[in-house]
Amino acid sequence: MSTTITSANTIQQVQAACLDNCGYAEANDTGMAGRFVTACRALILFRPSKTSHGKGGSVEFDLAQIQIQLNEARTWLANRQEPDVTHPDMTNFRDLPAGGSFPGPWRY
Image (cartoon, rainbow, N blue to C red; front, side, top):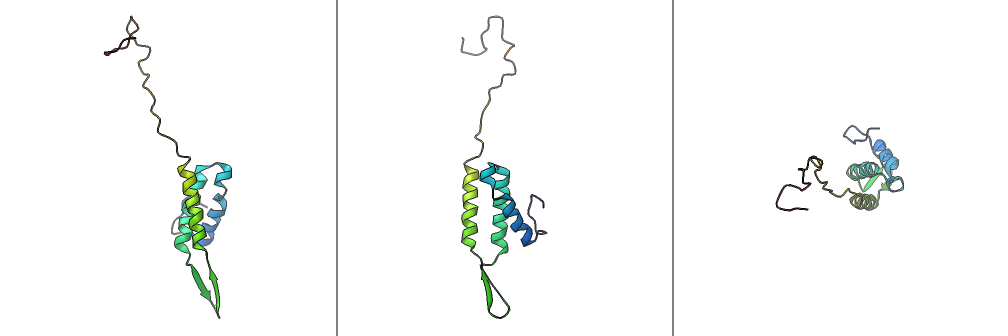
């Protein structure tokens, strides 16, 4: 199955994506977590909270439980985002003047 869920996916494929990616924390895999979040969002959109069939039979889905799983995955992802890091520009580091001092108002 594709890593992107589209309108062409069936409910069974979306469920499979949830199961395939629900181990994101154990695998420590942010990509899996992102796919899990997408699949949970699709499940919430796909599923009614209750459906009836035939003569009095009905099935209820706990959409709140899917929402809880979705929120946990989003929190897990947010706690693992890479911080912004600024690296110094060392392009001309070896091109110092003969005296070994950096250009500018400061001196070493």
